[in-house]
Length: 120
Image: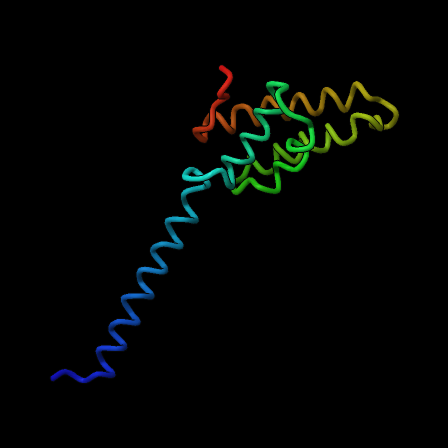
């Protein structure tokens, strides 16, 4: 009969390998399997972009994104949308242009990541 302590250690090692593998797969999926991460961020962006939702999801979408430059571009859209009513140095048109410029970058980011506009 084998040593029971050795069998327990081997079992724990196998469980640890499975857990690490599952964590690596979940981390690299980027939210493709569920509406999380980049998938949720791009969905919020497309809802705003296609005018089917409020601006609130687009303002907070960068918090759900998991990769750069999507995080940075979504953040810039949120800044432009949030400040659009205030006016950057009193210039509402500058904020609208800033948000639109960032939005075109997010459009490219989401499309390249596999989350193309569902309305197109």
